[in-house]
Length: 424
Image (tube, rainbow, N blue to C red; front, side, top):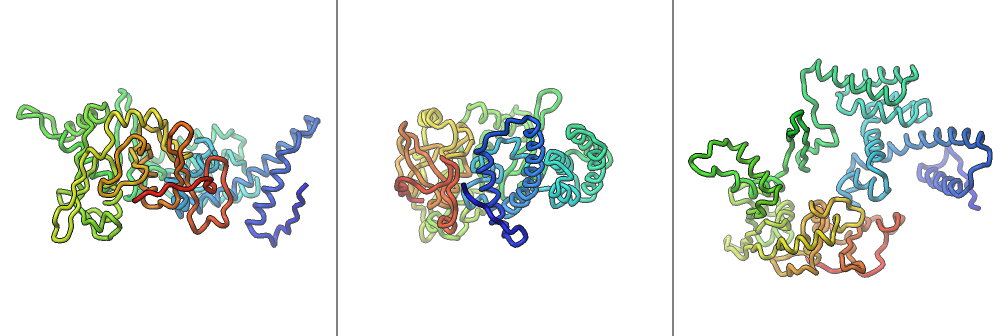
């Protein structure tokens, strides 16, 4: 039996966490006492301790989320890290993330949760209720909602009061609900929200970064042109019809050409441009050049065209159908993006069209991991399973591998076979 001795005030945070992990391991392996009364008391005590641990956990997650540390480890978002690395279900991910992101605005909640004057369930309910409020309204709502908690209302009732507060504030300010903080990605990441209307339609709101906007324009612009002199639709109506055609599978071609120097594609810093003159940063140009349906026009010295990618280098519809049968989701172990929404990836990379577009050299990866594989090849370990599917496993950043612990089976861990070499 392992012995744990910790001087609480002198111990570091890491020492406390390691001691707690050892105690939890021993406790999990013990049988429950025969006495049901003892089990009831133990349950209440253990839940109280667990709730206080959630206070510390919210602080850890908050730091990871604010610094985007999970991206260095190959996870596109904090949600993906919590789901894949730690095996959390979506509801628990949402709870822990909203508490981590709101705790700095909720001093009373944070203090009471840390001392177990407030349960984790109530803390999450208050945090979720104030997530869309500004700091002034947040402070007032926190006091009001904690007052309801002290009166003995259930977490469900407190959540209902929170929704009513939001409705009153929206009515006061005469504003519609804005996208929450999890939706507002700034100008680096694209985002899209949809809201169903009463008649079954949908309102669409969002933002596309330059990379995704180039593909949007190259795909929809040709299809959104007037059908003829009698076409009375305005541009928004034609754009909607073009998008419907794409979504229904009626049109597959994407016509985007990225003009760049050969040095840019192979790692230089010179910006590229689209055919309409729109400048594209070098890093984004390299990512765009990897996307299916995008042709890179490479220029040598004196702006002499060297190579124009041909569509034959992209997977055919038949190949795509086979790949979607093989890959129900992204080839990266733990990524849950459905295969139907993934991109076709050349397993050994693509450089100047020399990599063959053969079915046994292709896999499906989500857009984020396709770009991550291109920018961080040393953090992708590639093997094949017994059914011939490629399996991509994420590796820790190089500067952490000597000290990091292996994760759950099938997730992050040291490779057991040599990594395939591939050209970016």
